[in-house]
Image (tube, rainbow, N blue to C red; front, side):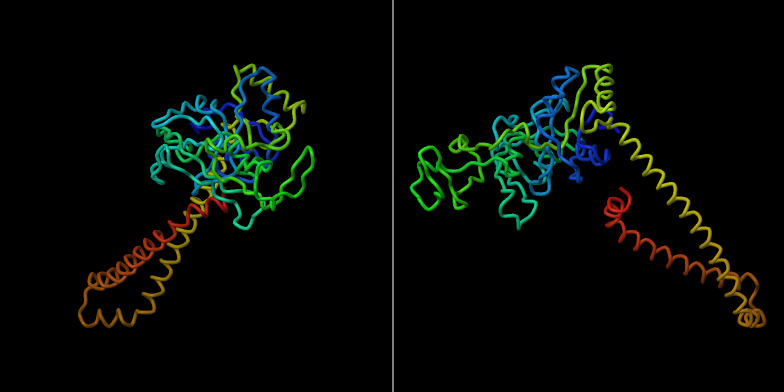
Amino acid sequence: MSRADSTPLIVGAKGSSTDLVINSLYFRHEKIENILMNFTGTLKLTGFGNPIPLLSSFKARGYSIVGTNLDYFDFRNLKIAEGRKFGFVGECVIGSRVAESLNLVPGDSLISSPENFFDFAGVYPLKMTVVGVLKETNTPDDQAVFTDIKTNWIIMGLGHGHEDITQTLDQSVILNRDSSNVTANAKLFMYNVINPKNLDSFHFHGDISNYPISSIIFVPKDTKSSTLLRGRFESKEMINQIVVPSKVVETLLQSIFRIKEIFNTVFILVGFATLLILGLIVTLSIRLRKDEIFTMFTIGSSRAKIFEIIGFELLILVVCSLITSFILYQFTDYFVDDFINYFIL
């Protein structure tokens, strides 16, 4: 709850509030609709607080790439352990666990992972420069790769850099040329790394205020500002949805604990039924072996000896059952997380 409690409000597209919060707080790539970047300006104009945009749609070697601005570092109180914060597109700051597991330090490179290896026209893997490593916080920030939002837009294919086609010597890349415009074909080489030499060549087409973001963390000035802003969303004066993360996570945890109670109840009932069946099996077994027991008693075995023999047989059965259960428990332990994610969460 601590991460949810420390996040006042989250704004996103209408839909599942749980998916929105999980994506914004824990950078899990849930399927949520994007909103437009210009909505950040709309929230800013209210004067109720500071909006922090987030775009979490891609990964780099298994870790989420989170596009945001420098306000996010101040909001989460994230400190730099090595290097510096990002200042240009193509630069990234990584969490402590990312640095440790991938053995990265400032100056190294990290390549974004394509969502689909067969998507040749969409997302380009981008080689990003690691400029900083964050101090450990024991939060999801330790397992994230932070970049400027424009860097994520370049990964998305909304921005790109290429050689100056007006100066190219390879005329085969020219599709059309007139006095005011030069159009290139698909043969034109696109840069997949951003460095000081080609930084100026990277550009975006269209109005970037209409580009997508995943959500917005809104930090209100005070309780009154928070209430007034939520009222505007409730009255449909503003589109999209606004949620209080602590309430969403608390509801989610209550559902999980409710499921846990159901499982505990089922476990008790099944355990009780198993004991009854075991008792029935033992009773029937003794009755079926009454001739054997009578023979043992006839040749001189005491009642205590007979109980000892039957008890030892039961002990062997219980020990073998416990060993089998322990092996099955260790085996299923590898799949319990996936089971919870797919069938419960």
